[in-house]
Image 1 (tube, rainbow, N blue to C red):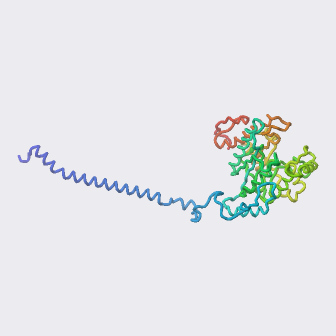
Image 2 (spheres, one colour; image 1 turned 90 degrees about the vertical axis):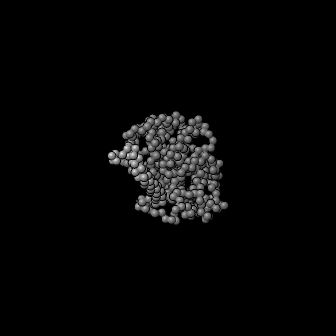
Length: 417
C-alpha cells in the first residue's frame, strides 16, 4: 500500500521537485532577453553611427570630387567681398555725370575689375528703364506704368536679367527722351559686370516672354537698334529707327558715343543749332527741336564709318514693334500657331519680342491725336494680358479674356505647352 501515497504527500513531493527547475529556467530566459536587448541596442547605435559617419556611396561615383581649396568657393556673384586690390572705383576723379568728360581707358579698367571679380562671368545684361519722379497726370497712368514695370520684371526674372528702374533726372535739363543718356552712363559705371545695357522705354512691353536675344549675332557690334537701312541711307527718314529700345555694349566705344550723342541735348549750348541741322537733314521731321532719335539717325547717316559700322540695325525679328500693327493679332493667335511661326521663322517673326506703344503717353495722357486715349488703354491691356498668360501658365492658370486682366481660369489638361 506504500505505493498509494496520500494526495497531500504527492502534492508536496511534486512541489519540492519542480520549484528549483522553474527558477533556473527563469534565470536563463531573463539572461537571454537581456543579452538580446544589449545586442539590438549595440547594432542600432552602430548602424546610426555608420550612417552619419560614412560617405554615401553615390558621392564619389556620381559627382566629381571638390578640391579642398574650393570648399568655400563662391558659386555665384559675391559683390560684398571685394578684394583688397584697388580699381577704378578708388579714383577720386571718377564721375558718373554726363556733363563730365567721357571716361578714358574704360575697356581696360573694366577688364581689370572683372579679373578681380571672376564670379561675374558670362555675357550679362542689365535692363534699364524708368519714368518721372512725380505722379502721372493721367488718372490711370501710374496703374499702367506699374503693369508695364511688372512686365519687364517678369521677363528679366525668366532670363536672369537684372532691372534698374530710374525715376530721377541725372541731368536736370535732360528731360523726356533725353533722360536716357545720363542714366546709361551712370549704369555702365555702376555695373561693370554687365556686358550689355538694354534700354527700354517705359511705354514698351514684352510680348514674347520666351524669346532669347541672339547675342551671338551682334558679335563685333556695340549697339543694336530696330530699323531699316534703306530708310536710313536712301530715304533719310528720322523714323527709320526707333531709339526707345536698344542694346549698347558696356565699352569705351559706348562712353564716347554717348558723349557725342548727348551734345545734341537741351543741356548744351548748341541745342537749337542741332534742331536746325536735324530738321534740314530729315525732311519728314515735323518739329524743330533736337531729339534723341533724330540725333541717332544723323550719326548713322553722317558718321557711318566712325559710329554706324558698329551699330547693328535689326529687322529680322520684332526687337521692338509699333503697337498699331501688332495688337490686333493677339486675340486670333493661339500658342500652337505662335510656336509654328517661331519654328518656321527660325526665331524671326513669331510673337513680337517687344510691343512699343509709341505715341500713347500713358503717364501724361497727351497721346497722339491719330488715335484716342481709350484705344491706347485697350491695346495696352490686351498686350500686357497676352504677355501675362505666358507667365501664368507656369502656375497653372490663364486669362480667358485678354481685355479682362483680373479673371483667370485653371489651365485645361491639353493646353499647348
